[in-house]
Length: 510
Image 1 (cartoon, one colour):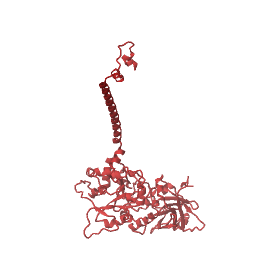
Image 2 (cartoon, one colour):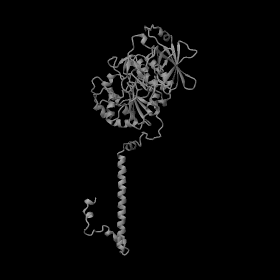
Image 3 (cartoon, one colour):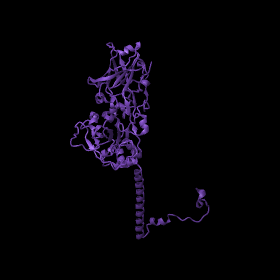
């Protein structure tokens, strides 16, 4: 510093004026009274000014930090709303979900059985949104969810030549649901009138997420052609999707304008996703939401369910019944009866080997058992049999999950058993599901000698303790099973026990 300051580098210079000279008079007691008063007044002014400057500094520093903190502004915004920001919130339950189902007054009676299967009056909350008021001779069923009539949408543009203007009305259900102003809503869940929700599992999935944040949760289409045509980044509406309350607050502000901006888009779910993309929130994919964009027999898809809670099924009217010799609605009722016994375990797959007989067993709990009279790798067992075709072109490919061809050789196909009944054993949460052999009319059987013992098996009894919902909060892992070969073994009945896997246990061929 000295090299740049001439006044400090000189050895000889003019006398330096004392900068404090003008203040020295304050220190002498011989001053006049008026001078003393004046000096005290000046001191007070300086002290007050200094305090004011310091106060303003801290005020602007902290107020600036708050204005730049989105968390602060966000919570302040909802201080008087039904939005909850307490860290001591109770866990999410079914009362925190408001369902919005897209329906039609004309078709409701044909489809209502799907909604009535999972709807519980005075427990589940929500509405079916219809396209018109009921006529005088039309009566709304007491077993159905309550309904509301959507607002007129004639002012909106819609230019998708192969679509329907009803997409506008359905896209606005989330907005009209929000505008009802109902209390204690954490999640808005959208679905169709033929969507079957498994509500306990839906709660399990949503409870993993902080409802005070902006979330958009759902799943893709199973058919690649659908995802290419519409979007890989959207939650498909038939499988259902969930919008958290904070995201709904933002969404309703721009939704109507978005609907006009994306007037060329085909579906309501595509329009909603486009609007949410403007907010900057991506879809959070959960594998248990099922659009079921497939044709034909859903067996392969359901028998190889991913390791995730079953949340929804859709498009059941476009598929063969999932259980043989039952109607579509009776089939889903049968699956639902197993779900009510053990929600988290429904359709969960377990593999095990019977090394004494060289058999492989795959259990899709509550639905089916497959018996392979040879040893098959776990990779093959968790790959879905392609019993179905794609949604739009009815082709054998491509899907958003791996599939394997159903062999024409009966010796390379599994023996198939469907659930016959489910029951509780005692009062400690143990269940037993029974699966009976199914043989299609003219199906050829394998004539190999090593196949004969397997052909004698007519049923499986599968025991398992209830699947604890908290297990879904941990890293997902398929549960293990074992074939029980007791002294009272009956060749026509196989006993299987499902349980959690032991440390270092794997389904590995010997």
